[in-house]
Image (tube, rainbow, N blue to C red; front, top):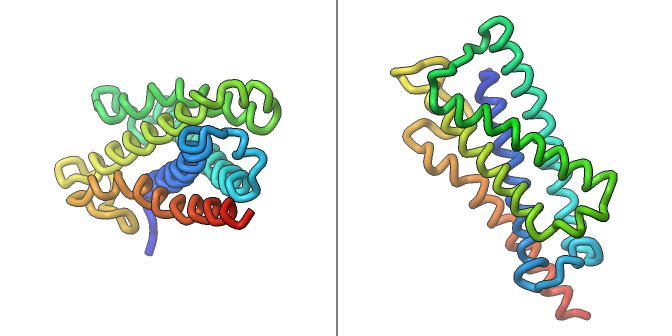
Length: 196
């Protein structure tokens, strides 16, 4: 079954938001529930899951950034995809994303090359990146679905994402699935504490 490029881009954003949700769950648990954010670097279970899902989220973000940048350049140079400056969903998703790119790139730089400031800013930087992912996912999904409506058929109906009638469920899915995945990670950490 072929997949439309716009749907593929939306799925990439979905997967990135899912990974960011899991990363936020482990970070929230360590930093706010246990009040020991250092566990994200010292505890084997929390560290491995936080880093793994953070790496996946970073990879998905870079892939989405590449595709989004190419689309924007194409829209500006050739009009394919169309540059829809009168579209609310296009403007809300596209222009704030430039600021979000700065937040993501700064976080990526700190995560991989300069850990000191990352640890100093972890109380707000982690939640800020999660909010950036949430904004990116929600606006990308709305922008995609608006262009699959019969009144605005710029893309074919979704093949893998849920149909438009279930757009609310589709938007909630990365957060719900992330919570379902993070639950056993936290449970495993609690069991390991009891065994010590």
